[in-house]
Image: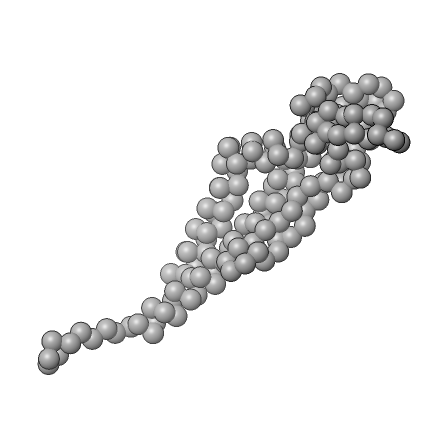
Length: 154
């Protein structure tokens, strides 16, 4: 090329390929978020099944331990909402109980008419999430989804 200029070829194709890759990665992230959320839902339900007792008998779980299974209502109430878009290229899901007493079981607090009863915290959502992160469960779900997306982008 005269005059010492540089000619770049294939820039249009490169831009199109990068846009396809971004689109595939975004779709993979949405799918991984859904799979991760449902995996966490299952793990939380396992945590809530670790101990049980008959209705009307004292709970066998101590403060700091997950609540014991009595009727299964709390366990059945753990659901997933999402994934929902959370900004460019980001997805989020919410996993937790819908039972009215789910929050006070996990976090503890004052309850009863006139605030006469104090329940100790019996955490079950956060510890289960932390175990899932530490075990690599969630990272594995995302890595697998992104690897599949990158394979399609080729």
